[in-house]
Image 1 (cartoon, rainbow, N blue to C red):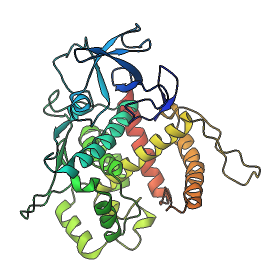
Image 2: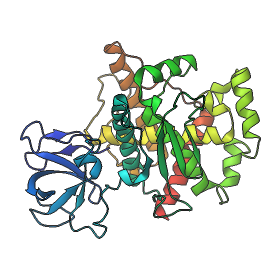
Image 3: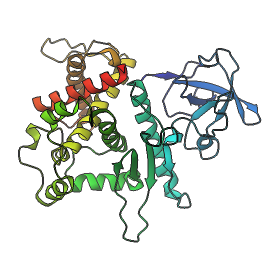
Image 4: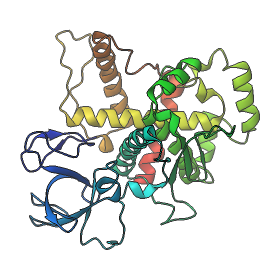
Length: 360
């Protein structure tokens, strides 16, 4: 992810910020321009840009807050007031959410906020990679939609998963204690909300980019035959555990369940890789050790222009530094994975599929 600044005072700000800590300007993210902007209240529900805006090409352009910004304080999206779809009350990101949690329960508002933050980061990356992306309203057959559901105590489970473009997220995953308990019980090295979103959207893009295309046979050569009985494979995994040698061929134990899950785990891992490298490059992060035997990172090639080999070399250097910094803080490794050759080949395949989709 790129770095953002308040375009009124040039203070560094985060993607999630809604107010500048230096000049106290109201901030908002404009999906049409892909930029964070500073605003002042212009009355009647409109906000005036404090800086020349690339979209409107004039200082003082007027915007409206996304409903989930103005009313719910969940979002920071802004919509141009003269947008062709002015009747829309939701920003681009919020249009992808079909169902929100029951807000009569106080904790659900926090969970919804966390879910939307992770979802917005996912959508930012998908857009940056040039991937096809439409809502269910825009494309009922191939569109993407997120449902944020909770278990009601009636014995009905809410399973996080994907079904033909419909991604269901159990909002309990936004509860840090619940998520960490689940991670430990399943012996997982990593479990985050953003990871869930990246994994589930991997299933979505398998259907969009691989199934029924020229990529299917090369997929089967690397991941296996997706026609294998999924339910039986999942039952065997939870009954018997992963194969003892899973780490030699898969990025995670769960990836060994079935070719579909192998693809989704690898896809999610690729998004981890490109988004983290993009952030490091945007921040100007470099590793310039005194010893030639230590990892070097001085390449600032934009992620969307880099070859896979370039990304791989930079990734190994960056994760060495990331894990070293985490250990200095007494934290677990930020990147608790190893990448054997078969996994690298799978990541390279994902890179090729995404690059081809972006070019198309």
